[in-house]
Image 1 (tube, rainbow, N blue to C red):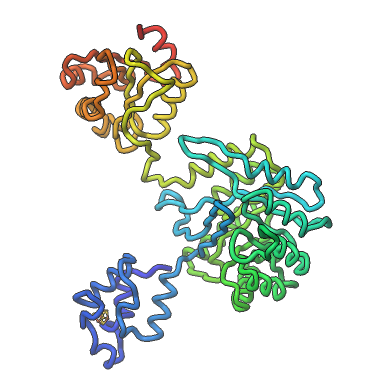
Image 2 (image 1 turned 90 degrees about the vertical axis):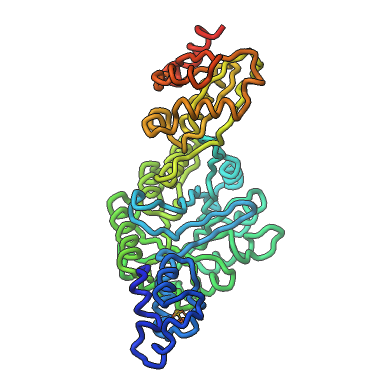
Length: 455
Ligand code: SF4
């Protein structure tokens, strides 16, 4: 657990009980005027412990341990696809934010004749959501009695996906690892996660993970978190640092309880043995997958690929893993919709992404051309921005002038959102010579409004 500035101070020379060490207190060699000032900078992660040459070994170990993230960051990186999970610092999103969205994987079996086709479909699937391209992260290839190595090699060649290899048999797992790289070379490094080390095979699996430098999932009897922590510690002792935990639970309640306890132990009790991301099996149940996204999986394996399931899960994930204190924004400026000409309507809205896309999508799908002036309202929606003084007549007028949109038009008419009709009078004062029109309150009504009122 991270230490406060004062707790760090007590571990520095100024807080030492050793007179020889304490003699260096406030010596300024670290570049700061006092040990306390250095401690405060360390707590804010704006200084390095190595800057003080006089910290005692015992204190150094404590300080280094406290500086490590409570949940280890695990990275998978195949060609062009990078997935980072872990490094989370809070139990609840509103406390700060969740940083790394869980990877969504689809399970294929080495006995399926269409395994490569399925993986290719997963690889190609992408949806646009408020200007972002959302994609799945990989496939989990299960050794189910077929030709595991050939399936891994074929999928690796056909796609750029990250892989999870599902085999508890070390010989089969090694065959998959050998086959899992382009060009037939053994897979070394990233882009692959190996499932799983259990109490029976952990030594052999740990050797494989260390040799092929891949992260390793550790699993124990369902819900037995004590056994899971002990096994993770053993595997770490065998030289594998990058671990992922599978507590063996597969249902709603048992998974929620186990995942929450693991997160609490890692964050609140500083239990390093469980300070790793969690892997979850969601089966064929999108609701369970949604629960895992919210609490607290790092990798989620779905049994089936379906766009109808993938889309809502990707959107849910995107929403939960946005910073609640930083609204998603688009760049302020002028956006052209359906190749507008100088006679086409000019509308104005704020730079909150969802507001922008609601307006732009309605106009675009109507086929009507238009200009959309997006004002910097610090990422707030129309009414919120107006109430906060971020979307007022002055800002809109400045935006009209700074973008020089008038030079691209043969009219001076501006349509404002109906929600801020109250701005009409002030805008007429701020923009002399312009005609201000009050548009509909809802974006969905814009196409009809444009057809009826714009002529
Ligand atoms: Fe204190 Fe900085 Fe000197 Fe270390 S180097 S003893 S932190 S003043």
